[in-house]
Amino acid sequence: ALMNPAIKIVSLTLTEGGYFLNDATGSFDPTHPTIVEELANLNAPKTVFGLIVQALKIRRYAGMPPFTVLSCDNIPHNGDVAKGAVIGLAKLWDEELASWIDANVGFPNSMVDRITPMTGDAERQFVKEELGYEDGAPVFCEPYKQWILEDNFPSGRPALERVGVQFVADVKPYELMKIRILNGAHAALCYAAALLELKHVHDAMDHPVISAFLDCVQRNEVIPSIPPVPDTDLYDYWELIQARFGNPMIADSIDRICFDGASRQPKFIIPPVAENLRDGRSIDGLALVSAMWCRYCQGRAESGRKFEPNDPTWDKLHETALKAADDPTVWLNMTGIYGDVGQKAIFVKSFSAALESIIEDGVELAMLKYVKKRRPESISEERVEPLSDTILQDIQNQLTLNTPAYDRNQLTAGIIHIGVGNFHRAHQASYLDDLIGLADSYSNEWAILGAGIMPFDAAKREILEKQDWLTTLVERQADYVSARLIGSMIDFIPVEPPNHDPLKAALMNPAIKIVSLTLTEGGYFLNDATGSFDPTHPTIVEELANLNAPKTVFGLIVQALKIRRYAGMPPFTV
Image (cartoon, rainbow, N blue to C red; front, side):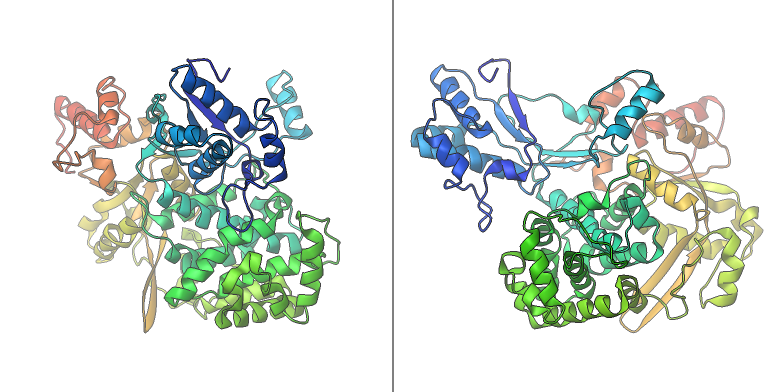
């Protein structure tokens, strides 16, 4: 099959262990026993990379074009890793072949994201009972999916951009975002959840202390360590991740997330610690995360229930964790995991204090102490009610917090805002909240309807709906913190891509006089050279093919204005 000229791409999901990497360097390991065995008989390869190298060699001498090797594994720089394995093996066989592969074969990096738990009997039974047939290997997953690819396919590729795949020049910013925020959040919640004997990720997100701790760590220590990502608000991305983690239908197990902490900590937790130490930012929350891992490796939940070994190096970790109860530095001396970070005085002090607190007070109180440092003193450590209209009076009575002084039930929408991110709610929404608060009946006509067309807009809507579209706005600078509630948004149009009928209907409401936008620059379809609208943009070309069913914001606006015109309705301002 690899010699079939119709095959232009060979894609891989092997897991990290299938790439034969050296633990210390992270590069291809030519001394790996499996590779040594492969080299003994390269004409009869047994590994994936031996088969790929052999096929490329035959294709080359047959004058056939090579295929692209596309890694879809959830590992950093997966294309570079695949390239290292293929070329590394090829060099051991034929240096000239290795040079030809380097010059002619594409190894695009990619970022893949979709939470997909393992299939078990319960999933197979669901298909049988609910769908009426048997499938021996069904796949259950969350609705969300993301695939970002470098456009490096010398032999051609399918037009995946037509179905939502993003092609970019450099995957690394997106990859780092996902590793730090999504994978890092998994690593931050799992050991606390295990110690408290929670079964699933959504159980941890429902736990008031774990969820509050996780949010504090992400906002204070993780997100500040991430460089800007094109067309992405990192705080909006974190809110999307929280919504995904909270999905109870996925039932992603805590045991799965806890597995192989010795590999996960150096990838997801230690790098932001190192950067925060370098840049003078806090590391207390991340130190507590690492201390919770140490406490987990001591082998028992807080109830005393014994954990089953859950790491390839469990025996060593268990022995070291028990010793760390008396001397925390023993744990940090695992240089293969912590490197020189484990010897930094600030981290040693913070980790030691965190581990002592967990052992003496319990993991829940240890997390509460961290959260309390980052909350107004007037907020109780007990579980608080979710934000909503029904608790506004209580908030006004109990907290020093500015709340809407107007009756939100009297508001009508005059504005549709598309792209409800943090900036919009801190900026336009706060101005309108001020205006409506002047108690001028004229101002009541200018409330906001939120809107969006992307899957993450649906997640944002779900979060805001639970709190009656209210937003807590916290203004901070070095010497003070001020908080207020913003009430100028009164609804959020349902987001149902690719069906945008609810938004189409709202745009035809004669009460709507303004449609405001925060789309980021990439949403305006500009020509990179001229800075002007690009009618040849692939998304615009696709839009023009079916203007009666627009999918872009601007297609929807044009359609609405056209209908308004022929209906004799005044247009809205954009």
